Image (cartoon, rainbow, N blue to C red; front, side):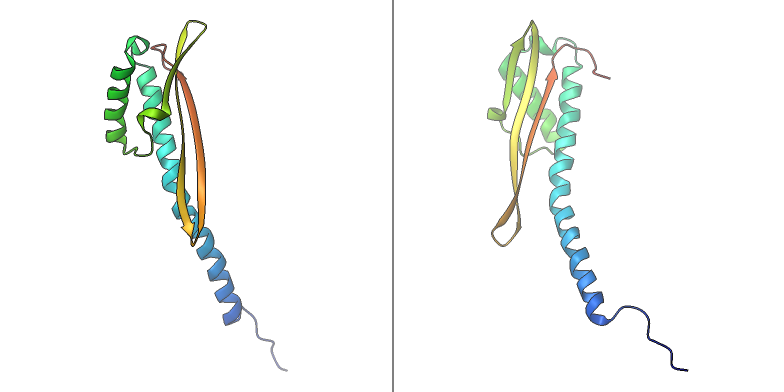
Length: 125
């Protein structure tokens, strides 16, 4: 009685490693981009929850947000990405930006992020 070999061949093992490595590469490239975005959302919500956050001038807002960005390691957001608008008597802070991360060779991953908070001085939770 001859037993049949079971298990993976070396070639199938290499193919599995390549597929797993490809997805690991994508995750390693995308994780910092999304981690930064969720840090940005938290910073924006904390700023909006401050009393009188809507009363600050645009320059004061930029200086305060820039200080908070430094603490939270947010590097993708610039002054031109921040906009303060007033709708129906409520001031809103909008930050919209995009991040381009090289994936491999001449392929890039582009992430577009956009978040808006009310500057009412109340927590949104």
